[in-house]
Length: 98
Image (cartoon, rainbow, N blue to C red; front, side, top):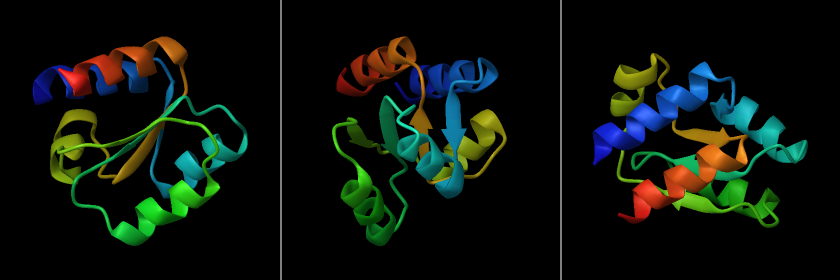
């Protein structure tokens, strides 16, 4: 299942609909572009808490994907990312729930 999720994340990145890393994800959240927040399994609870405090109604997924898996898949080692497209976010939510 990880491969399908990572493939979808890669597609979102190539489409320019993914904000990767703390600063970019936070900026996306502030500008209300974020449709989904995804955390890797090995991020600090402090990071998750920071985004939960600033979040109003964007869905949050605390995945079991590691930062190394994301790095291998999309070429950037990050612990948090936001999906800035409604369709990509719906599909990722479906994949995470399967």
